[in-house]
Amino acid sequence: MDAREAALRRAHDHAVRWLASLSERPVPARASVEETVRALGTELPDDPSPPTDVVDLLATACEPGLTAFPSGRFYGFVVGGTEPAALAADWLVSAWDQNAVMRAASPACAAVEEVAGAWLLDLLGLPDGGAVGFTTGATMANFTCLAAARDEVLRRAGRHVGRDGLAGGPPVRVVAGRDRHMAVDLALRYLGLGAPSLVDADGQGRMDPADLRRVLAAGGPGPAVVVLQAGDIHSGAFDPFTDAVRTARAAGAWVHVDGAFGLWAAASPRLAHLTAGCADADSWATDAHKTLNVPYDCGVAVVRDPSALRAAMGLRGDYLIQHEQGDPVDTVPELSRRGRAFTVWAALRSLGRTGVADLVDGLCRHARAFAEGIAAIDGARVLNEVVFTQVCAEFGGDERTERVLARLLADGTTWISGSTWHGRRVMRISVSNWSTDDDDVARALDSIRRAAAGH
Ligand SMILES: *Cc1c(COP(=O)(O)O)cnc(C)c1O
Image (cartoon, rainbow, N blue to C red; front, side, top):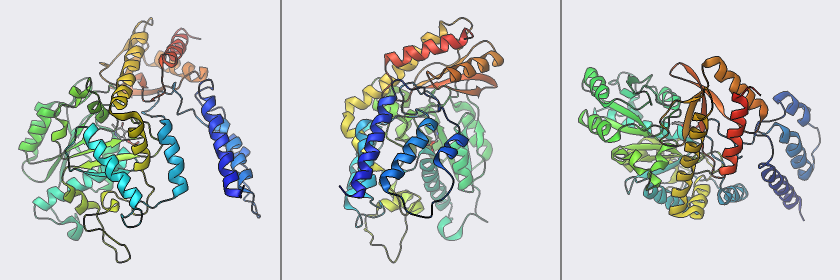
């Protein structure tokens, strides 16, 4: 066995042990950053070490400081786990070490992007022929789509951003819901577009279409982009797409949808009504590392008009061998890049159409079980309409909710993050892991009951 094979076998053994530990290990990490630094050692050795020793040291030093993100009892942030086929595909991606830049450089990368991209459009109900880019996450997918939007609305106003820049050109007005995700603001900041004008939302975070009409009219004519949301991180709520898209179109705006986790409702016949009208937008951002459960990091940018995406992201280089129909590099902000579509392809191929629908339905069923279980606890209250995968609850005031959250974390059976929603401290549950089962939910609810009872 050569050193490379030995190191890979060692990594495989550590990985299998880690995965086997997930069903019983506490979800929060047991070691701090400082303890992990000490376990790793800070001295850079003068001499080489055998790869197997390096893998062993890394695995044993890091293990106590790992959070069980892929556990079925992790409900913090919006975090997916890893579908078995996608995880295994990810190992191959590392071994293959392809640069997903051009068709000519890696035909396999381009082919898998093409197939996985078409499957995504189909499953998410998005227009055939849309351009699909595989990014690091929804933040960069939002960035990619909004770059295409910015350049296109300015092009219609006679401004060529790639040549002339933004300075001295007409302003671009970006309008978004009050309860949009902060990643939208971040993308707008990268793009030099500043903070969005905000539209009122209802108690669940759904944009008020009448206020959208008012905000668009108040801004007058000129280049405009409207950002809608599929899946509010607190309530899981969806914007009223049909009405909002009609209003935005009437104002001549580009319509973009941030659907990091919520866009996946479209893949379930039982939930697709939540995204009704969404497919009439111009661009969509979603994540594969959340609801689809592929490993980090993988987001997806979709733009209806491929020429708009290529105009924003495409590049020409003398030393590149480029295809006249465009290359993977023309759909994303990066040049050299990991092949991210491989894990998406593997997850979709493994689940199939009904498997994806069942996955999304299952997450929502567990979210409803959480809501019912919490509502039955003395003094607890579920604050959102549980339409998707998110549950927000409070336990009789900010201080008590904070204490319940702290006891829950100390107990370690589950990981659930706190948040502030409409000025109130809340327990925020996001069911995003494919492996969560009824037993995980029952154990997590027991832990929440114990925390609420003060022990
Ligand atoms: C998670 C999330 C994002 C950011 O996605 P990353 O994958 O973390 O970059 C953006 N919008 C919404 C609604 C999200 O839930």
